[in-house]
Length: 146
Picture 1 (cartoon, rainbow, N blue to C red):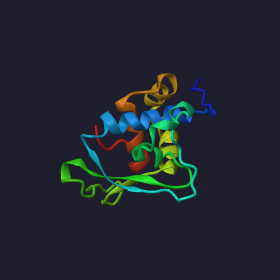
Picture 2: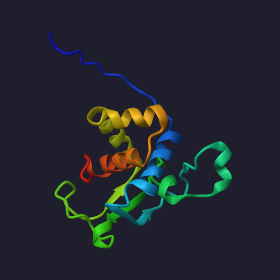
Picture 3: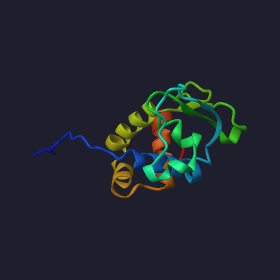
């Protein structure tokens, strides 16, 4: 008798995703990536700026830009190569950009290929490792480092 395969849809809170991206930037990806620039969203874009009670905090480009559905992102370079491009065949080399579309793709990959990390994200928000995994999946399509 074989296993049972099911498909299901899960809604993940945007703030939880933003928190995991923040954890990834502030404690997870530093061993392989550094922020080398930003891609501003369109001027009329509805920027994601966190919780309603957090609106006074101002803009955090490393979170708000890639969480903007209308465009925007964070450009990443190789931390071991002074921020220059990555020498990976996975992305053809060069710098990579974390975008909202990439994050959504990364969440899907995390749910199917790395369910332990996805479960951590959904259950308790995850940590720096969860953020690291999500960002790698979003920009490379797989875990390349670590």
